Length: 373
Image (tube, rainbow, N blue to C red; front, side):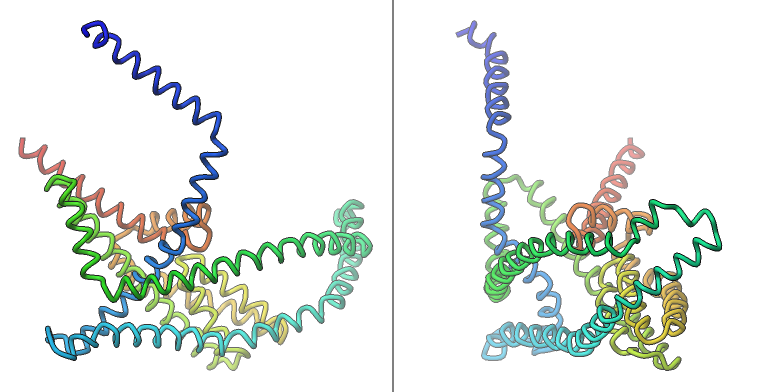
C-alpha cells in the first residue's frame, strides 16, 4: 500500500498522458461530437437570447399594466398581455423599417446593375486618358487587368463561385429560420414561466455549491443582466435618435431617399461604432444613382451628425449605462467582429463591460483589504 501511495502521482500522470494522446489521435471525432452537441442546443441558445431581448420590453410593459396586482385576473393576464405587446412592438418596428427601406434599396440596386456596363465603359475611357496624362498610370499589368475580356472572365469565375455560395447561403438561411422558429417557441415558454425557472436554477446552485459560490454567481448574474439590458436599451435609443437626426437633416436639405436612408442608418446604428459606416456606405450608394453632389452633401451631413452623436449623445445614453471606457468599446467591437461577425459586434461590448465591472470590483476589494492590513 505504501509503495502504491509513493507511485500514485506517477500513475496519475501516465493515465493523464494516455488520455491526452487518445484525444490528440481522435481530435477530429471529438470536434465533430462537440459540434453536433452545440448544433443540437442552438435552438435553446437562440431561444434564451430572444427571451432576454423580449424580457426587456416585457418588464417595462408589466410596470404599466396593473403593477400592484398580485392576484386575480389582472395578475394572470399581465404576463401574456405584456408578451403580446412586446411582439407587436418589435413587429411594428421591423415592418416600418422594411416598408420604408427595402423597396428603395432594391430600386437603387437595380439602377446600379443596369448602369454597370456604361459605368465600366466610362471608367475605361477615364483610365486611358489618365494613362496618357500620367505616364506612371500606364502600367501594362494594370491595363491588362482592366481589359474587357479579363473582366468578363473574372465575372464568369465569380458567377460560378457565386452559385455555390448562393446554395450554401440558402441552406444556412433555412437552417437558421428553423432555429429561430424553435427558439421563439422556447422563448415564449421561458418568459411565461420565468420566475419558476429562475427559482429552480437558484435551488440547483444552492444544492451543489457553497453559500459563497451562490452569492458570487448571483452577483455576476445581476451585473451581467443589468449591463446587457442597459446596453441594448441605450443602443436602441441612440440608433433611433441618430436615424431621426439624419432623416430630418436630409429632408431639410431636400435630399432624395431621406426617410429610407434614415431607416437604414437607424438599423445599422444598432451595431456599435462600425454600424454607422455600413449605413453610410449604403446611403451613399443609393444617392449616387440620383446625384453625386447629393451623395457628397449626404456624406458631409452624416459625418457632422456622427461627431455630434459620438461625442455628446452616445456617452450620455450608452457610455454611462455600461461604464466602459471608449478604448475598450472599440476593442470589444473589433474582437467580437473577428470571432462571431455581426453577433460578436452586438454582444462584445456588453460582455466586455460585464467583465470590466467585475474586474474593477475585485480590484477595489483587494486594494481595500491590502490597505486594511
